[in-house]
Amino acid sequence: MRVGIIGATGLVGRTTLKILEERGFPVSELILFASQRSAGEKILFKGEEVEVMTISDNWDLLADVFFCSVDDDVAQELLKDYKGEAWVIDKSKVFRMDPRVPLVVPEVNGDVLKTTDSRIVANPNCTTIPFVMALAAIRKMARPQRTVVTALQSASGAGKAAIEELRLQREYLTVDQEMPADAREVFGHTLAANLIPQIGSFSEAGESSEERKLREESRKILGDPEFSVHATCVRVPVEVGHSLSVTCVFEEAVDLKAIGKSLASFPSIKLLPDNLLITPVEAAGTDEVYVARLRNDPADERMIHFWLCADNLRKGAALNAVQIAESLI
Image (cartoon, rainbow, N blue to C red; front, top):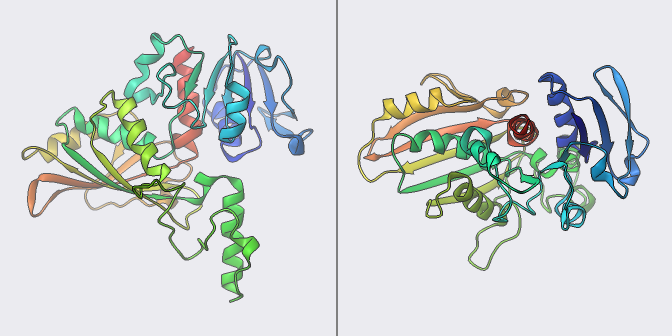
């Protein structure tokens, strides 16, 4: 297939290229697009250099499938009237909640690709993807009445500039210098050696846009508009790897062993034994969604708790998009 990547020089774009090569995706021709400042840059793919171009009119005729990893406003402008024949797998939030556009995690709801008329397929948020995989496995055994999640999200979820800012902040802290304003442009706060309990803008009710995404996207992917999930999203000083602390409350006592077996047998999920832990450092660079510390609540047999960890650039973004493309072909 002719493959195009829009936003090829960003973190997700470069990770997509790496995964396409690792998985032997059938690329007959590769087209790379990025902003004007990256035009002319050359990226190595399968031993050959491919030059990055700026996008132009009739770009959709140049490939059979595009991976779009650009900012929301750029995606909106580029795809708002899209009527091309090429598939576009879009990582922005623009089309995720559009009822005409499938929002897909292949292991959970890949079948929707067989019936959609849309040539745009939305790739979910990097926190939503591993979360709904775990919940889909659990729901095979019992449907939670209520789910509470605290998402500890790495700097790379905000892009390449966010990682660079985190590293810069660490340098200032190391030499014990005052943090200048231009070292806090991405997050608005010091992230190094710190936590920021806000990702996105707040609603009048005090919910952040990232927390709302997790709830609404999960409902669409699971096909359950009443799915009850309450999230708190926190930016943490980790470069790559999102972690989630999850609590599920059921109507009655649940069989923890049965839930464990369902998680262990679910595609792309790796359930760790009780005595093993997983941290973002170990999850970074891998394709699995890790579940650890699965346990009953000691005071309420209707509750379970678990820890979840995944590479947000791979399974949380680029890998999921490549798996969508593999499903399409």
